[in-house]
Image (cartoon, rainbow, N blue to C red):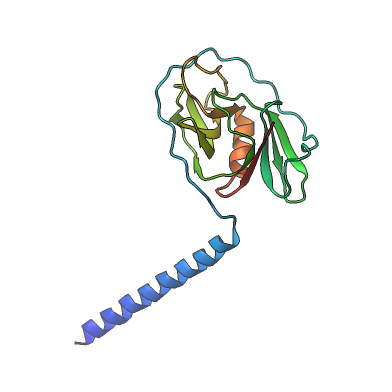
Length: 187
């Protein structure tokens, strides 16, 4: 009988400890950014094209007017440029990107999912540091970098929502763009 009581006390202690750990994690998660819709991972389906040599990242430049306020990722469709903006509205990193065949509409989005990779993108290229924030025309829209650092041109006739960048920029965006991070797309 004594062994049964000791087992109950042990199980009760473990249960209370587990509940306390979950409560602590829930409180910490509640203080962070809130995720919204989660996009699915892209599927592999196409072969890659030529690999142009990407240009180097630029020093942080002024954030575009009309791109919102606070900590966010800003993506300019026309300039094919991304800014990583801190909470004080200062650009911490600016770099060129290479869009796929489907671009997101201008607006405000939220990082819904992330995949560190490597996986095969819808264009057949091995990619990593994938940060999903939207879907359009059946394509997942996400930032990523090719594992080999290249950025092939979009494959004709293949729907791709990948916004590619150099490896160092992909790593920086991956670190900055946690789930729930705001993404502002501007013209």
